[in-house]
Image (spheres, rainbow, N blue to C red):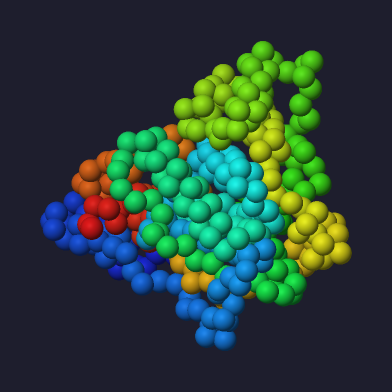
Length: 351
């Protein structure tokens, strides 16, 4: 990623000569990648029978993605809003959660709803509420999620095991981490520990700012509220980096509804489940998933370069300004063309 080895030579030469290219050509250059394309794996015909839930109480793997694959979760705050919202509604509807993985532009979850219509109700509540919060925070309007979510019912224990491993390994396959428990956002690190990414909280030794933040989290949780953008920004304000990590761990443990013991039963225990995740590569053939490359590191490189707060502002920029930023990113060889379009939401400029 430190060189332009990934970039086609013709593309690189063209972007270096942008000052000599007319506005129309510059727009068409980015439009080629920005417009939505038909991507994704097809459903294996032999598994179509499994897509329907019979009576409820069965394990279901659900997949929700941004409309065309644009980046939604570019900060920990984005992920915490979704996570606390997901857990709050799951608790209210009494839906058992066996797994959750928050990626950059999509989400996987493994649930056991008690009734056939319960899952659709749950996902509609989560996705529509998150869309409103996300749009309000970004100052935009329009759809965030694809209108239909993919789902596959798992009728036997082997398929459930495969799905549990697939959710945990998804971030590892996309190069977010090297081992399953090195990332927060598949939540496997919390199966055995309460503070895997920070020092243990001490109520007698924490700063007044962190103490107030912890009490505020407890207050919102006791009221049955998820944490929205404005609340989270207020909680993190004034915290040093180490305290920020402590608070993130605290929030996740406080709201977490993933039933690790129930998931572990499919492997003979939680410890055996965690070991299986590092030793096995699982695949999911029952869901039509957006296929946008095996490596998410270009996204992280761009977000790190601009900062999470600045990256969030890209969504409401004019098409001309977005293209200026895209050209700058491409010149600096921070990411390939496709990744740049997904980060900047350039599809909206040409739709």
